Length: 171
Image (cartoon, rainbow, N blue to C red; front, side):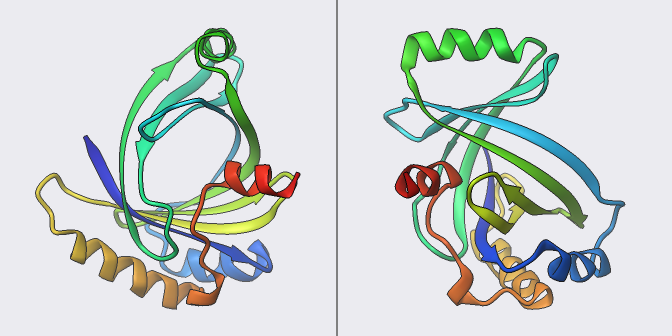
């Protein structure tokens, strides 16, 4: 199963963080619209991410709910019929929630920097340091901490849960 080291933090403004992300970028930024539907799942999280009506991903992941760098294990399957798959999964498992966001993806080497504008929540930065199969997590944690400093993200900004949980808590 693939894994990464992940952090998520609330930020005041994407506009303030974007230039810092671009300064460490190794590729041009990509703008992505995402519509994530979360389903009941007893041993992790299961979400369908729709990019448009003909392109989506079914993603299973497992990670602890804690602030700061954490290991996330994940599996991804592509779909060319995300709406039909959403209907099947909703009928079989039940929907937990939905997260709609605009993401600016900036690559910094092997790390995905996500600058997210989440409908109903605000603006966030998420780092995903992709690990090799046998790589020590300490290396990825160190990379995440270094990028946090470069982006000006403080430990007081870190959040310990998923966007879907924050949305559920706000209603």
